[in-house]
Amino acid sequence: MPSEYTLKRPVLDVNRLQKQAKKILDEASDDRNLALESYRYFKEMVDANPNDSVSKAQMVDCLKLAQTSKASSIKVMELLIRVETHKEKQDNKKPAGSMFTELENLTK
Image 1 (cartoon, rainbow, N blue to C red):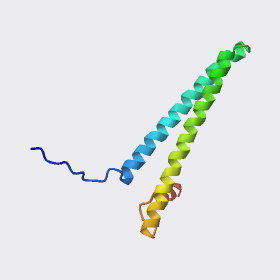
Image 2: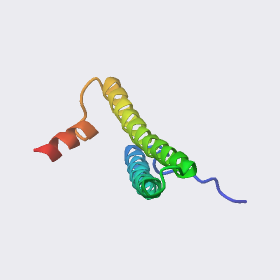
Image 3: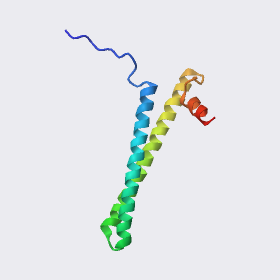
Image 4: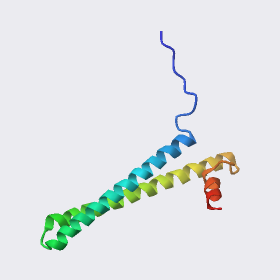
């Protein structure tokens, strides 16, 4: 009979959340760069032929994708801040290893 697997660490610990957030931010940055590169490509096509309505529509779609990737990054940062402030409220004091402290140390 197989034994039941028990986790050694919580599924959503701080390190895992930070790692996933970094991955999302990196992917959003890559997506934004690709969307802006595509925008420039379609812009060159429109500059060559101003009556090309398909390329104009693609330019708009590329800008929408770039904006969506930026919004995703903002949402991730907002969620991290909410998690951190919630953790601080529960502890009734600022923990030594908080994200805010780490950011302050990086700026010094």
